[in-house]
Length: 361
Ligand code: KG4
Ligand code: ZN
Image (cartoon, rainbow, N blue to C red; front, side, top):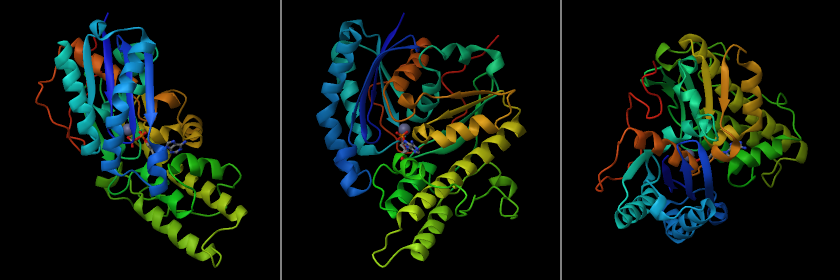
C-alpha cells in the first residue's frame, strides 16, 4: 500500500489530497481564489502566488487531518510541476520540496495535464488503465489552459493529435462571459445564463470543423481554434446591445446558449472525428470545461455506443490535488522520483509516453 500526498498550485486553486494506491481519495481539500480574482475578471499570477502562500499550509494540514494520516505515514509527496503559471507553481513546488526534505520523503514532480486525464479514473476506476480493452484511449483535455486531443496506446505510448492553435475552450468561455458581463469564471456563468436560452437562436462559427463548407487543411484536422468565435461574439454584442452596451434578458440567455453550444459542438465534432480515425475504444473527457453539463450530455449522446466514455466526476474536473496524488502514485510504483532541484515549467512539454498506462500483457 502506498499513501501519496498530492499538492496543486498551478493556477487559482490551492489544493492538497491524500490518495491511497492511486485509487482511494482519503481526503481532497481545495481553497479556491475565485473571490480574489473575480473582481479583476481573470487570474493575476502574482496575486495567485500570494494566495497560495497563505493557503498551502492550512490545506495540507487539513488534508492530512481528514485522511487520518500523519506525515510519517506518507510514502511520497507529489506536486504539480507544470504546466501552469510560474509564480503560482513555484509556491507549491518549493513548499513540497521543503516538506519532503524535512520528513525524509521522496519527491515526485507531476504533470498537471496528465493529472487531469488521471482524474477520470480516480475513485476505483484505475483498473481500467491496466486493461487492454481500454486502448487505444483518446483523451480530450479541455480547461482554461488546454484544449487537446491525446491518443494513448496499450503500451502507454502517447501522441498529441491536435490542440488549440490560439485560445483554449475554457478561455473562450471565460472571455465570452466577460464580454457578456456574466462574471468570472466564465464557464459556469455561461452555463447558468444558457439554461433559459435557445442553443439554436443565433449561429456562432464551429472553427476548423468544415461545418461552414470550408475545407480543413489536413494538418489542422484535429486542431482547435477558439479566437474567431470570441470575435463573432463581440460583433454579435455590438449588433444587439442597447445604448448602455447590454443585451436584454431573452437575448442574453439565447446568446449564452448559442455560444455555449458552438463551443461544445466544436469540441464534440473534433472528438468524434479523432475517435473514428484512430479506432479509439475509450474516450476520456477531462479538465475544468468537462464540468459543463451540455458537453457531457452531447458527447454521451453522439459517441457511438461501442466506445467506452470515461468522464471525470465534476470534483476531479476542475483543479484538485487528488488527481496529482493519483498520477504521483503511477510514478511512485515505477520508483520515478524527482531530484530536489527540479524547476517548474509553464508549457506542456512534448511527450511520447503517459505515466499511467504500462505495457499490458
Ligand atoms: O482545469 P481548470 O480548473 O483549470 C485549468 O487548468 O485551466 O479549468 C478551469 C476552466 C475555466 O476556464 C472555467 O471557466 C472552466 O474550466 N469551467 C467550465 C465549467 N466549470 C469550469 N466551463 C464550462 N462549464 C462549466 N460548468
Ligand atoms: Zn487544470
